[in-house]
Image (cartoon, rainbow, N blue to C red; front, side, top):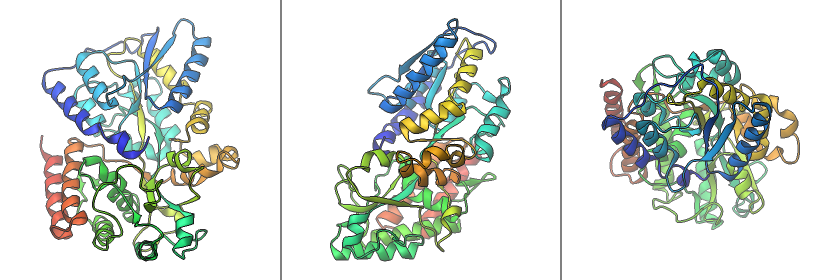
Length: 430
């Protein structure tokens, strides 16, 4: 579930998807009114599999003529690779509960996904369940090819023990502004509490920017995506502010420029990390931790700070022959009760309009309380832009970031300006 492992295979997956599409793949449509047995794919996350199998069992007990079979996406391959290849070969299941928003434009280009808003009540179901945030998942042609399912809003986790060693108040860490974080980071390193303040991956894969640059950009911009009304924002003031902050972190050796083999936060090599709610189960018993929203240039109030969503969604491939059953099962598994089960069993945030209030009783319980800050943050998340050439766009951003912000080989302003031009070109090419 950790960031690098989860996204590590996406780049190769997208390349394979593009290749199979270019080779003339594709598949014929199934039956929107069809009912009968269906197969679904789940991720190989142990907690999600357990949740999925419970949902299937409950459904099958009430629908013996429309039985559902759950399978894990084959081990050893990323879900994006499997989905892209299956679309090309016409071998997709009827529902995929692990669809990356960044990969959806390519799957749509392949002609592989059903627009869910064309299913009975589809538009209302999606928009009423997810609220205004649903618009981020609407494709440029106006359709929803993905149901917003669950998010892992990115926040800053910190080690209270290391903060105390550095002379910082672990119960009031003062991390709301860039200057705050820089000052705390200098104390952490200069005191010897930890060799680094925060250690995001400096690797050059396109998705790495979602866990250093993009959360801070989302916060500094007041909740904007990296593309607004068809215009790239790579050299906007918000992006430059975020880049300026991280440039100082690297220039002052508060964040290492080399990759760490393992988990720097768990190993005490860094006092902070950018994480989602998955961190609660990973660090919960081994680290005395606290969590705060990502910083902003001027220290916006916590209840106004946005961040990256890190969502995974559900899609319905066009090859599904019994699409009516698939649509009913999708609604069954994203009901309020099913979402409660997802939340309590996995700790991930169902993409509901007000998840914190809907499940307030659980967040007030001993088991749910550690997740409460992430539930509050879930109301203010920003997704990657749903645009063509999405992966190429993020790779251009990462290349500029790596050269200028991390390694200081060129001025940040000119690097982001050049990248903005390249991204704008990718947005406009046919």
